[in-house]
Length: 252
Ligand code: PGA
Image (cartoon, rainbow, N blue to C red; front, side, top):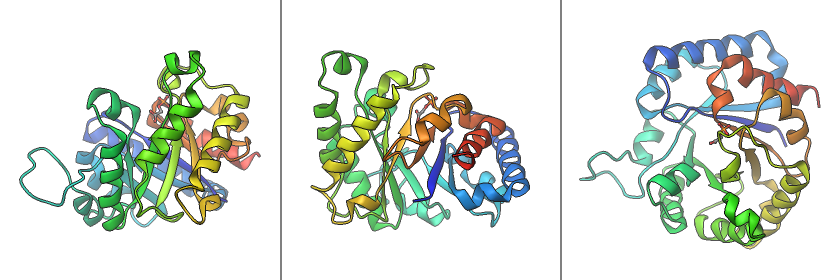
């Protein structure tokens, strides 16, 4: 399975920054054509920068995604953005259930599942995020927590084509702390097993690792069994780092 190198730009950068970053990523991928043969790319800018980024990327095969969407169809929901609007912009992906949404916006797995169902209906691929907190890992309940999040966040509409899972231990996001390879391997195996309860063709679902992925640790993380790519926050804001992570795939 081709690795997916997904960048989550979060709430960073003004339009000029997004344009520059998109230009640098485009330039890098055009210059090293083997990268696009080995990896699929996706960048998820803030909503307001999506069109700018798309214009710059043009027909280069880098997918663009959003970082969230509403569970409802268009209507009187001030401040919300629908999956139909995201699809209409030409996006392929939407990230759902990121731990920052779960934490700061009280999003529960049932809400994530409702959003994912609507996004699937509108033709988007959902990157559904799951992950345990530090406290949950200390208590040794990380597998139960992640399994429950997974089962409760995936709607019946999910297929191997429209679902990507991102395992992101909350304590490793933006902290510089990366999970131990053995722990990543265990959790990705648990997720792969659990997916069987939800999907027929679960072996074909990509499971990304996220949490302080950097050029220095990319090769060791991306060689782990059942790690089918990375969801990258901080390092995706620097084109050279984002591209270096993809280059690590090329070196595998
Ligand atoms: P990070 O973020 O790479 O900055 O740890 C990952 C994420 O939140 O998706």
